[in-house]
Each structure stands twice: as C-alpha cells, then as structure tokens.
Amino acid sequence: MSQSCSFLFLIICLASHCVQGLFAPFGQAEFSYKRNNCKPIPDTLLLCHGIEYPNMRLPNLLGHENMKEVLQQAASWIPLIQKQCHRDTKKFLCSLFAPVCIDDLDETIQPCRSLCEQVKDSCAPVMKAFGFPWPDMLECSRFPQDNDLCIPPASGDHVLPATREAPKVCEACKAKDEDDNDIVENLCKNDFALKIKVKEIAYINGDTKIIPETKTKTIYKLKGVTERDLKKTVLWLKDGLQCTCDEMNDINAPYLVMGQKLDGELIITSVKRWQKGQREFKRITRSIRKLQC
Image (tube, rainbow, N blue to C red):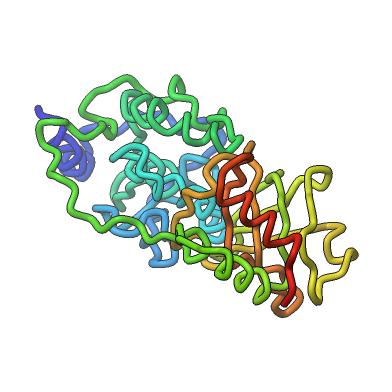
C-alpha cells in the first residue's frame, strides 16, 4: 500500500475495529482512553488549522488533559511550522497535540518513527539555531516502526507542488534600504534603541515575548523609558505568531532593536541583526552619535 493512501486506509480500518488492542497508550501507562473522548478541533488551535481530520483525542499523546492546556502548549510550536523546515512538520506535531480520534475506537494512533525522524533531521538544526534542543518528549525511538497502522511521512512520489503563499514577514523584521536621514528619522520616532542578545523567546496570546541578556545590553536611546523599565526588560513583537522574522533567527547573535513604549509595554518596531563592520551599522553608529531629534 502506498504511503499516500495509508492514512485514509488507517481511518477506515480503525472505524471497522480491525486494529483494536494493538496499541498501548503512548508514554504513560496511566492514560485512560475511553470512548466519547473525541473533541472537535477548535479554530483557535492554530497549529493544526487545516489538518485533514475534524476530531482530536483528549488526553492527547503529550498528556495534556484539557483544551486550555493544549492551546497554551501548541502555540509555541507555530514558528517551527512557519520556518517550513519540513513539509510534514504540521502532520507530526498535530498527531501529538491533536491525535486523530474516532468515537467507536478506544485506542489511539501514533506517528510512525520515520515521520518523526524525517521531521527531526530537518527541523532540529533550526531549533538549535534558536538555542532549543530537540525535546525528550519527541524522541523518535518512542514511536512505532513503520506499518500501515501509524501515521507515515508523505511519499515523495505523491507530494503535490507547494502552492501555499509565502509566510507573512513581521513588519518590524522587513529589510529596508535606508540612508542616513532615514536612520535618524527612525531613531527619532522611537522611544528606545537597544543593542541586545536574546536570552529567551516565548509566545503569549499570539505575541512574541523577548527577554534580553542583561549583561550584553547596550542603550543607545531612551525617551519616556526609564532605567527602571529596563531592569527587567521584556520586549514584545506584536502578533509574532502570525508572521516570520528571519532577521532574528540566531539566538546567539546581537541585535539592534528599536521601539515604542505603549500601555507600559516595550513594543518592537524595528529589529536588525548587528553585524560588526557592516557599512549599515557604521552609519547607524555614526547617526546615533550625532543624533538630534
């Protein structure tokens, strides 16, 4: 049976009880999978938007007991899908966060080991660049060897050419050609300009939360922002889960971030990777020294 047909076959097979009893619950033996645990996949589960089945099982394969917990944990993985490191990243992650569920079947269905391995090989280096190791909970040895009763990777012979639109780039991360006057104007219209290294990135309510390393922070401009505001600096990239920021794709690199203080929060309006010796940053440094707004 071809891999492109195996998922459809699996759903039919599950509905007819032909695999009942073959699967033990994933991970923790104390999981109790009972009938009627199927829940509609909510529109708010953006990680799995557009997945090819309507219902998911709770608890899921990661041990999340309720939808609130699923939504909170799943949001952090959306940027990995946006990176398009592998065509099956969404399929793999959704098989864990929102495993396919059929009302008449007690057992759960897992991703095949090869699906995990292919996604890991392509995406683990991307995660590493951001300072995140491939987590133990996604260790591929935990998943079953390939057969028609687990979710396989897409077959290369049956993959349609990608027709989806390129992901939206966050406004603050768009590359811009700026002369000295543009640089000064941008500095003047913002409340702060900082050179930082990133300590931590998180995602809250659709926004990207960035915590800088305090020891590597250089202050170039403060307006309406006090030193006290910067003691526990938290920067926000609004709607960061809805767009990509390739400009900030290396957690070990320094960045020049500019922004405004709005409702007590420091909102990023511009981010550039700081490359020492690059002509643009020599101009920025020169503009900062003679800054007169």
